[in-house]
Length: 443
Image 1 (cartoon, rainbow, N blue to C red):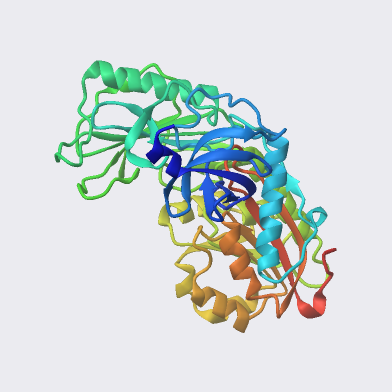
Image 2: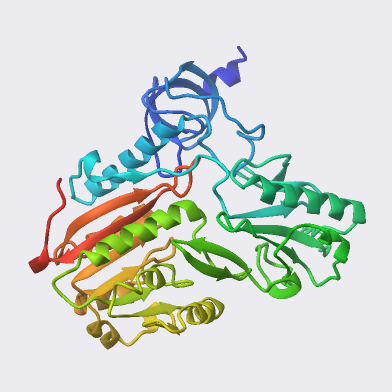
């Protein structure tokens, strides 16, 4: 073995996975490595890169939970990092991670107190932002390499009809000889193709993210697309998959059906990425709200988006108010709420007058990955509601936020929802109740 190479190789026993899905283990030299594509319990040889980061060289002792990845691009594409782990074990690893986060916050929870709702392992996502590279490659970014694009022939996360539409649009783009954005050279052109689809309705929306340019109708004519947009991004300094929407064809929205209710979704509005699991989330929140029997059910829904949770609870609450900072989301929520007891206003949560919290009994909060704004946390502590339902797409931050309430509140129930199979991410919903009304979860 090359002497220099042998100095960089380490043997490690993998103890656990971190929140990014990297395997953490101690080496024979007393150090620690973080290795991708491994499973706790495995002994591996890893090439040391920098700090703790390492590259998997070979597996010396494999886990019984190791399986053959089903996608030919796995290992290069950054879209998913857990296809080498059988799905039932992925669920257990996510439970372990959440238990560890709560333990670090001073709350001991048994795994039996952290149930997890599974998902179809593949074909579950309703959105994918495909990139066009400056040289015409089409796909997703290579893991750890922003400038490198994996030229995709398949993606197992999207429904087949949505992936087929994406590949066909790319074939037409290539045949038309259209230019692609080259940020280094300042060349304008195509940037992204955003595919969104209704899992339950089968409707597909395609959005071309481009510099200011004309797009030929041949790119989408004859395809079964519910809606087509161009998102014009004239900022040469960013590389975002968003822009000013220009409606090109079809309806203004695509639609999704959750728990019997239709939600219209525009190109720049957020919707839960796994509708099959989102429906289970809605059912769980409804059950928890319906179980509140010691008070009128007046509901405040912060970071409400299109009103998924509050609209779905409209028949079991006295009234509700949804708050969202995205104007188009609020407009669509208001249209959906016509004739109901639910109202929506457009505002940033941290800019609300604190007294608004005083008129409600329960709070649903579904913040972005960064968690709740400090002003919102402070306001809730000043005007405590009897019940809080916290929906977290980033449990590490969610546990931090929730720990601030534990002196005043008790943990009633918690459930995980696996919106993101083949990745280390998981959704968490926690029900807290004001201390004098507590019914403790079994710990």
